[in-house]
Length: 364
Image 1 (spheres, rainbow, N blue to C red):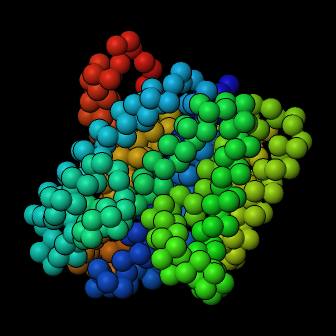
Image 2: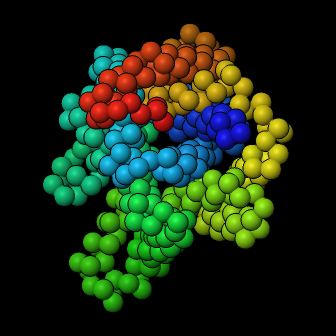
């Protein structure tokens, strides 16, 4: 049963990656990188919420993975093995593609070897820039969410192996403290209150901390996924269900906006079906959809800069039907992601396993 439910999560990954791609292709670079207007619905401007959906899924999957892992070191190794092959492949292709075809320097930072090497580490360029006064950036700006993911892995892993039974409680405490800290030190109101009390140096240190460790801005989404996993294990637990509902309400209030509330309501309903009536959304676990969902990480890494450049270069060929080009790019890069995952990343990951582990471990 859990396997069937995880395939439904793969379907949710497809929804998430499509939302992000539609946002980047039809809205994000409309004013700066295109010479035309797609004239698409405003709703596409909220496609960025697909990243938040990824965070919910990650909260579920990582909580499940931790229960099947013996040590923190093993957990981190398995995460590295899962993430690094796609990053090496997709970031390198992005670097080469942009270097060869971006004659307008729309993505000048993507041509930097230093930025490519930093992207391979998953470390936030903002952290290094703050520590060493450098001017680094990701090879592809979409990689920002990986730093949030990595931070979650480390925090969740440490809390789990410190107290396995109290992971949800301890993670909840940390997330809510982080939310309070984030809004206090990032908002203008918080600045007016705290800066006179703490002084410039301490206030700026904490402000920069929350700007760099952006996990605290998004931690509630991961917590929702964690509670979802626990609710899946104990469906009759009314207190857990109530907590799940409260988390969605709190998150909706934090980013109060009509479309974000609609997004939260739709996602909430889908996840309730996922727990109690999975047969209602079983189509999300279809074979083709699942294959794309499993490869969504690769698609995410490759889609932004390459896709936007292709739109910029080729849209004139389609005239008034230039929106068709975007759909073709989505299909092409999705096929690439599926191919890369199956024929490049999995074999690469298996070789890494032989290096990091003496015994064979299942691919997570």
